[in-house]
Length: 261
Image (cartoon, rainbow, N blue to C red; front, side):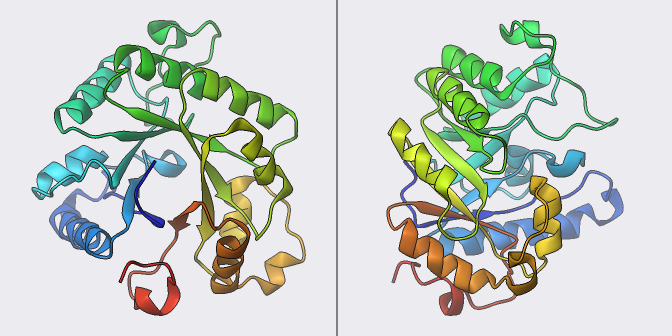
């Protein structure tokens, strides 16, 4: 799997910010280089929260950034036309991209919906399982696909879906943000798959609860992202940690204990 201790989430510029796009691309490039220079991997979301953004490779090309196949993860969801999906996959293959994180994704009125039958799906709505299977069939020797796991969904439903994703070809799993030791994440070990645990690095815990569809509990009043990261390192020492909402204004050496020397 990814040869890094941390996988840092990096957002690409919004398509609605055309008047500011050059500055936003410069900012993207600066952050991209900082992540790589720190020895971390990069995960670039695909239109998160249904907001149209420049694609991962589109942003990278705009600033002639160098793609390390071992360090860059392109997220890909089901809100693309079939022609756009194939174009993105072909472009990723030409760039020698290795890792793709496959998600169902967030829809919206500005995003097209992938037709399930066009990629071999049997239901009326395309699933991440369909997309994982399609990528592994069409690009079996090119990409290593990963899948998402939401420990806040009902079990065993979510675990059964994880099994289907693995059967479709997923080789690694990225969890939703978790608080220290999580019993449902622990059950993923039964699948003998590489696990990436997500750490929420912001104090804005309300946004986290909203994004994962979880009701607030006592942790919402006392959440400390650095203490939680320490707990994740303690309970999941073998796992890469996905860092969402990481501040680029801080000295990472002060807050990320597993950065390479």
